[in-house]
Image (cartoon, rainbow, N blue to C red; front, side):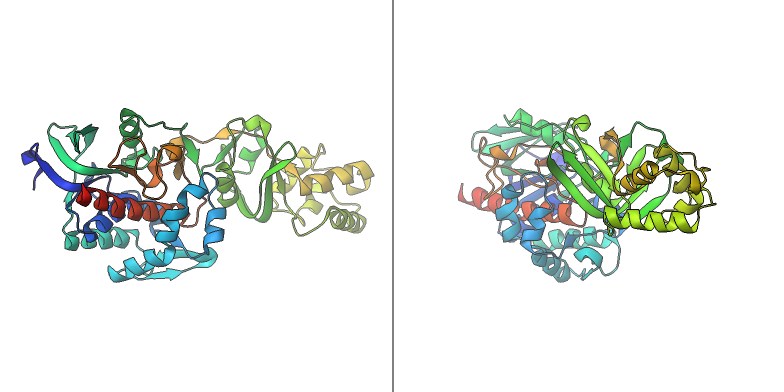
Length: 422
């Protein structure tokens, strides 16, 4: 079937808009459920965002238990309960194995294709859809979705209409717009009466107004702890790796922290613990020992034993001291300040990098308006949502792709059942 000849008759049972992880899974599951399926992708190829996930290796899911999975979802984890339980990480790996792409588990329970090629994941789905009879149309951009009687009229940007009994919107968010994620699904949702919660970047670097992080650009810190508090409430407290950049801070810890930050950055106190394995008392005992043994040396020289050499002079200045200060001139109060800063160096976050640089979109179609048991709109029967277009996002490590696969699978099966019963 070519889009140029599409008529006003109902062309398919299930129409999937978007050929990413959620859309391909939805199309495959709907076809396996017996529906006639058409998938529309506005790009020239499928799975464009999949190609860049996991640094081109594609971290397809995470082999953790369900309780841990839900802990990795900062927003609306309960909404995902049915979807993730009905289509688990084992289901993802089994499906890929069946489609000729076996997987392997790495550090942090991250799951990758054994070939370490993201393109193999997309090819596996493409083969599966072809074998299942899914009609895939590339370079097919949709401009509008309208309920029309007992079906949907889907208009193409280049002209023409396709009618379908049910529609699944799996168009992604607005992160990485070069992959085609330009917010189309949010517009489709709003045109059909849905609310879209505010959109911003998640899993993205954080900006710091102060200049000192720029002096450390490119420096990575390992086995440190980052904590964020709002008043008396701790909103993030994890140990791992971070990176100083030209704009502020990034790296695994910071990217994860970004998904927990509120709208008002000024209300959050973020601190860096450079010695999480040591108590303040142990830190002070070590400083006293180091200072006693190196009383004639300069502060920055002694600090090199506690941190990367590039950081030592910058850290000294953050403590209000000259890097050249002789150790034997440092007072007890100054030593206590150094110890306190080692355990709680303030990172004065004032924003995030642009949403275009974010790994995923935070915000989206309001999940209160979507049935978690089926992914169908509560406002428009037969209209479904799956993947990043929904207001759910998770930490890095394969969790966001699992959300795409789980919601896509549930939407595909549900949309097929709806279409075949109507």
